[in-house]
Length: 270
Ligand SMILES: C[S@@+](CC[C@H](N)C(=O)[O-])C[C@H]1O[C@@H](n2cnc3c(N)ncnc32)[C@H](O)[C@@H]1O
Picture (cartoon, rainbow, N blue to C red):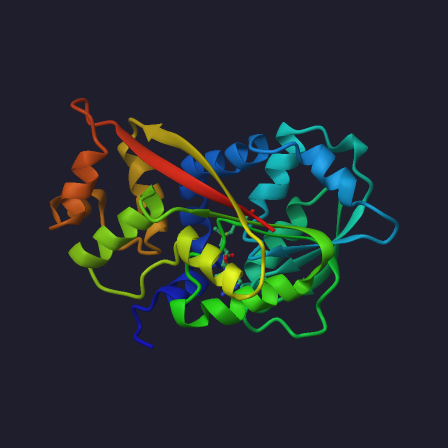
């Protein structure tokens, strides 16, 4: 694995040292989670899977933006408390997500591991979700990770992977960044995750949502894009001047210099 490898850089940046960069990213990326909260009838879906002693596994919990969006944008008062297990290879992420939880999500196990290395005894969850979570998962580990995801879910449970599609901003940007700035392992796409879940035996329904995020503030655009690449050493000016990446960024910019990023997220329901 080279020092430039995507999974290594992801882990290094999901840390206290990466906090400012993470906060800059969420100036725009909080919208990803608002969109997911609006894409389904979450109170009904969760209430339908609830029973005494029910449990939920949040795969790649990050800083807990998805449960936060559900609590902010939906009415979860009909959902009974659920034991909420936090999985992430970054102990920083697990601590951040735990601090963000509130009713009905009650923190239980802290699983500091990658999905592909989740021990086999973690099964029987009524809900398993991974939201904008698996981009840095190495393609070579995808089948093992998908098998663990499917195995963790109880029969009849609710599974969701939300991930950007191949043509969407996060993937298109990182491909252009790799071509124009420095090469690294590509991000994993929704289509790759969907196919791996199918190979792991899951029956997957692929729902798509499209939306844009915009800013006229170059500082916001720079912080967002640096986090998209886990690289805060390259300025916006350098990105705009780079081969391939410069062309991609020009396609996102209007005549006033404002940026609009186009997103297509797949909600892969199990
Ligand atoms: C963008 S965050 C996910 C956001 C989160 N779902 C939320 O609601 O805020 C991506 C997370 O994936 C984690 N991650 C990276 N590789 C992983 C892997 N192989 N298995 C599980 N988590 C991984 C990172 O450490 C990071 O915390």
